[in-house]
Image (cartoon, rainbow, N blue to C red; front, side, top):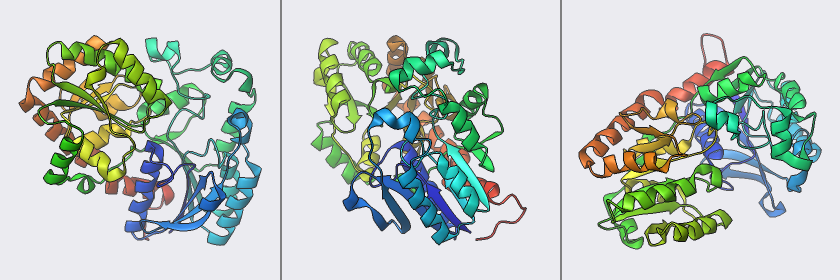
Length: 413
């Protein structure tokens, strides 16, 4: 089959969870013998055009507009859509799989894809199709109620609110033959907000890519002064909603019993990272906070290997949390949030612990339990590794998508 993936973000321009998951799925399809093309976006003319990334043909389209217009341009980004249509006419795909298109490529690409492809699939990877950002309403955080109202939308968007936005998104979604959510949590949130008939296919991971050389791990530990330390890893895109301040508050409690503990933050030192540094001083843990700076994918793998416990304290409906399966592929236990898709991935008391990230005491207690009992932590890590192979193995996810791409009994490249 000729398969086109559309995604606002894609490596090496972006290494966010959605982009990485799209890349891995695209590469999995190529390795399964299909002709794969990726259409993504960039901000600079110098980056635009056709290129190759790890054997994948990638087309980059420039899109760079003021964010205040997102509620409108994300519906129909006309200059970008024209270029997407030209590419689809050229490629003549059997399948178009849209991913995150809610910023630059725009939802109108669903309508265009329908003209050129036999099957149109959209993988929803977050809650942007039902709200203006992260789903973190008091209603959800207190009662796990994912319903959103126009008041919620106005509160979140302010003057950028577009009263027709969600209606238009639902209209565009009707062009998809199949809508896929990456977790049951996201599926239920979509259903509660009027988007029905959604299938669930979890993200996958290739565990063979997560074997790290012991010498590389030792070098990483020396570089970041991690020898003889208990290392907690906080990875992913840094933001307040990811629970960074709660992780620092938990660290303050952990240090009372295990003063050799450090929090390793894998990510660029941006505005939020600097805010974390200031807050760390407030709670007295600044000397136990280590920022790695920007890291490539191979370095991230080493960071996991050098850690004892991985923290995933998101305070919103984090639809999947790729950090979870990366930690498990690295044989590390996870202290995971009770919100979003994490409880579907991390088995409480088996591969890690599920906690309410709003309660730092709870994070600290479960983390200390693993730090004080290395054998239990190792057992949890091994159980997580086995669970990844059983339930989140990339090649299995490729086959699940192929059944969606071609619902006939037989699927051949």
